[in-house]
Image 1: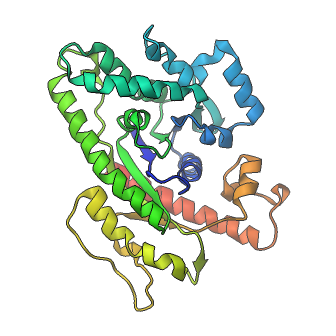
Image 2: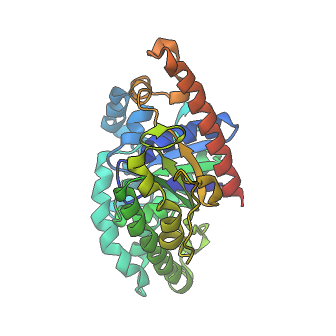
Image 3: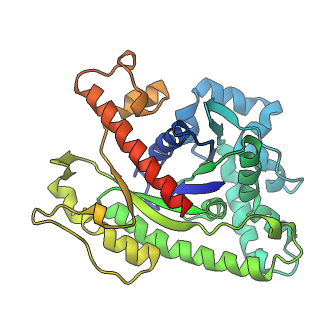
Length: 337
């Protein structure tokens, strides 16, 4: 089983939309997929489920094991272990463990316990810090998942740190703009600091603890995905080209930590993302399809005329399917390496 998250310190780069579509496409390609909504905003859960279904789920006290916050509640309040999760099947070979707004209450507990993981008496600290990792493992085992997608918010806080500890790989969704680049510059060093700190805990403070038997996750950044706001002649418009040219260099230097300073451009200024081994793919802007897909609660590449598409949108749906299928296959290959 491989676990991954799409993560950037900048919001609005499409990570939740990408997660939703990639999870569906992985399942179409014959993989068993689990999606965990570790973002208290629950946007991904709302993409999968009707609001009335989410409300019923949250209000039913007998179904606390069917959402993330309910599963983690005993650990958060210090009165038990992670509840055995009951993911919801939302499509063939695709399961969701929805989020819930009260997950945000876990942030303070995680922040308080993190420094205590290095203490001699750190049982409670380790229970709290690894709770999201344990929940991921239990949910994956429940559905025999091949891949786990973890959706998180854009912050660099304690909740996201605990979520990232459950991931084998991190993928950065980016838009060619200043704010995405700054988010990447913040995220890269932070990931290295988290990895260094957690490695110290694992090697020096887990001996004899039950957490020592949990599969380790290195949350390595394996690449980035560029979402183009606007496209003209298959390249970012001039307003975005400046920032697009910075992406390969910034990813290599700030996220991977390599001292490589290059970017491949043609005479027209077009960035050759295909020449960068860390670029997992580019996704066009499917602006007119997004609201229709959200309304239908289905991927853009599944939209039909009955969902309101017509004219050139029919070709856009077909193109969207090709792009996401190619992106999914590329991700599967990288995760296997």
